[in-house]
Structure formats: structure tokens, C-alpha cells
Image 1 (spheres, rainbow over the protein chains, first blue to last red):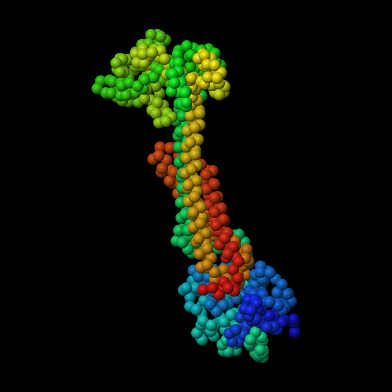
Image 2 (cartoon, each protein chain N blue to C red):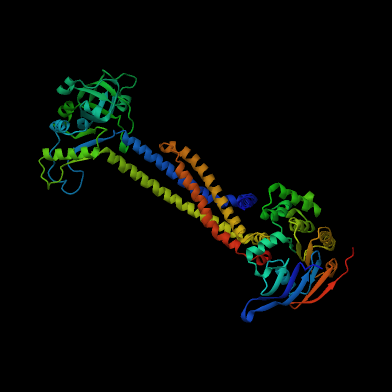
Length: 233
Length: 402
């Protein structure tokens, strides 16, 4: 098999300093292959969110190696990490994090604006992404006019409009009822299968984790165990 | 990148129309106030200059006695006489016309109407010196000047008050106790410097006024019109030397006469209105700065309020520089918008106020340009601090912000 897309080696993360210092990660080793669907589970304080922030290039490890496409990410500065997020990563959050008073299509266009995509192309790509999540009819509605499930689908459209390599979803179903949660998970599964997007999902619901191929369990700042399911193709 | 942030800035402003409007209100008022003050001030300066140039340019006025200061209360200085006029005319180069004046105020009466006016005794040279034409009739004849006949040339204000509906030329009317015949009418001049009405005058031959009104041979003043090709200051200097010699003043004695240059008065008055304009403009400028602080206020609130939004932008790959630029551009777009509205408002205000205040409307592109650029600059200065704060946010903390 190819070299893993993402590779963490001995990652530690310490918050604060001196007596108040708290070590959230105590040496995490993790490999994620291209096209995988990974669910990260664990109780609160186990370090799963800290790991996701580091994987999402939103935070830097205190020590250890982080390779993405074979590149050492831990050495990049703030703006380089921004450019990396812009180019390779898509984010979906528990709280949707859409811009208020901004239509769905404008929200979806946002990452393309930062990429400097032209107006026509931007609109087309945003429409296509909304189509993919089944919301093209709602393009001109603001988040306030959409249901939670719809908002999360807009957020997913925003994350995939740039065709990222990796989609990071931090408890995307945390604010949704079961039916909407299933819709979202099916959408993510579909994106993983048809578009080949690697998905990293943080969740504490085993039902949601079941959609993944790989489940990583965190405990006390370390990877406790990794379950791998056979791909059903 | 700039184009992108411009789009974002306009979207943001459109989304908060009322708040944006209230934010820029300070700038709008500041810019409008500065431009209005300066434009009206310039109009006033122009009006003053016009009035003073109506006095006649390049005219020196000689009077006996010092203007003011210690020593002026002593013995009265020797008066100016007609011999001085001849001496000036003969001995000083660059003099276009010299006219002696004797002046008094008197009540003019015709039929049942009274009018208190200035009686000016002078010669035909006065019209030349002032470059003052007659609208009808004629000047004095040499005989009238020599003999001190009771004839007069009158200004339009006098015509309007005493000769309604009548052609005054050839008519007689009484000035104090002298009955005099109107031979000519002056062209209208309007207001002179210091708000005096130049058309409110009755001009008689010098001898007539000296004999019938003042009762002496003294001249109140001598008007010296300088040839346009000569430097007024040089003429003034030689005039001063001639008069010192004629009045037998030794080198250590001060002048016992004074020479006014109309241009000096004009300069003094324009510079004082200019100072006033500057002061008013500065006061208005303070309001512009206060407006800028208003923008900073709102932008700071906006950064706090939009922390999550900034987090989202950073998470999806915005650079710190782009976030900084976005907020900066937003502030500059806001303040420039305020500037544009202020310029328009000032244009309307000055157009409306100028006629009310009786000053001409002079559109000054420079002050409009400067005020607008200053408003944009205020956006940069007061927008930078909030923008930097937004750009420095940590994306994780910003996303977590409620």
C-alpha cells in the first residue's frame, strides 16, 4: 500500500506552563490512508478534539511529527497552515458555523472567494456543491430560514466545494435528531465513496461511528485501540 | 485579494445598513461641516476682496496726522493743501491721477424728502483716480471747478432716495443750505470696504465744499492713483519723502501724515477672513476626528461580535492578512462612503447657504478632494486597530466564541 496520507508520530500537546501545565496528548501515533473514513471516539478530555485540531492544522503539536502528503506540517507557520487548509481541507462543525444573514450560496462560495476563483466559476461550483447535498432549491435562503439538518448540509457543501483531500467533521450530528443525523452520515459516506474524500469524524455516538471503516478510540491523551472494518464493496 | 475584500466589505455594509449609516454619520457631518465652512469662508474672502477692489486698486490715500500711537494727542499736524497736490503731480513719477478731497456729511433735501449723505469736495481727477464712470450727464467744467459753483454729481443711492421717477440731471436740490444743480450721475458701484455704500454720495467741486461747507482751505485727504506699470510701494516711498520735505521734518521726527494703501487694507481684511475660515475649518475638522473614533468604536464592537465569523474564515483558509485587509477595507469603505455623502451634503448646503449669507458660491475642488481623502485616511487609521485585533485571533478560540 502507498504511504499514508496522514501520519502522526509521537505527538504531544501541552496547554499552559509550569505547575498549571496540562498534557492533553501524551504521544499519539496514528496513520490515516487516502480515502479512509475514520471515526475518532473517546470520552471528554481524552484528547480527541485536540488531535482533530492538530489534524485540521488549526493548532500545532508541542512535539512530535505530523506528515501530510509526506510534508512536515509541524514546521509550517500560521499563514502556511492557512493555505494548506484552504487547499486540502474541509471543515464541518457541530454548531454548523455558517455566516448569519448570508445566503446558503454565499456561504458555500466563501472558500472559493479566498481561493480567488472567478465569479461565474464560483457560482457554478457552489451550485454544484449545493446540488450534491440536495439543497439547490434553498440557495438564496439564509441560515435562519433553514432547519438544522439543512444548515449542516450547507456547511458540508461549503466544505466540499473546493474538492478537498480531507473532510474533518467535528461532531457534525451533535445538534441533530436521529433522522437528520442519518441523512448527514449517509451524505458523508457517499462523499467518501463517490468523491474519494478522506473523512475524519469525531463523534461520541457509536451509531454514527458505525458508518466509518476505521474507528480510533482515545483515552487519556493516547490512542487506546483502532478497529478496522472490512470494506463492503 | 483586494477585489475580494471589497466584495466582502460591501456585502457586510449592505447586511447592516442602519448600523453602517449610523457609523458613518459622524464622518458625514464632519466632512460636510469642513467643506461648508471652508467654501463659505472662501466665498466671504472673495466677497471682501471684490468689495475692496471696488475701492480702486493701486490707490494711496494721504491724510494729515498719524494713524494712532503715542504723540498723536499733541498739537494738531499741519493740514494738507492744494499746493501739495501740485507738488505730488509734478515731482512724483508713476502717478496716474491726484485728487484732493474735502468731506462733510449733510442732509440733502428735495421736495419733502430728506436724505443724509456724504458730501465729497474734489476735482475731476477723482473720477480718473477711481476709474469711476458716469451713467449720465457730465463731469465738472473748469469754470465750475475754478469758481466753486454749486453743481454736483450724485450717486445712485441719492438718486433713488430723492429723485424717484425723475431724471435728476439738470434738477436742483438743496444740500444743507446750498442749492445745487445735478450735472451728472455716477455709475453704480455697490458696497465698498467696511460695508459702506459707495453710491451714497454727492460730489461737488472742491472749492464749493471748502467755501460753503468746511469753511477752510484744508484737504481732508489726497487720493493718489498709481500707474499700473509702477510699483505702489516705491511710489509710496517717494511720496512719503516728498511730504516729509514739504513739512520740514528732520530725520529724527516721525511722520505727521499717513499713507494708506488700499491693497494693504484689502490684504489685511482677506487675511482676517482667511484666518476665520481656517479656524472654522479646524473646528469642523475636530468633528471629523470624532467621527473617526465612532468608526473605530463600531469596528471594535464588530470584531467582538463577529469573532466566530472570523474563526470560520480562518478555518476555511483565510490568511491573517486577508482578515486584516477585510476589516481595514470595511472601515475605509465605510468612511469613504461617509466622505462621499458628506461632499454631496456640503455641496447642497453651500449652494443653499451662500445666497442667504450674501457670499458668492465658489466650488473649491481642492477642499472637497482633501476632505474626502482625509475621511478615507481616517478609515485606515481608526480601522487598523480593530482589524489587527481580528487578524490576530486564534481560529480555535474564535470558533468556540459564543
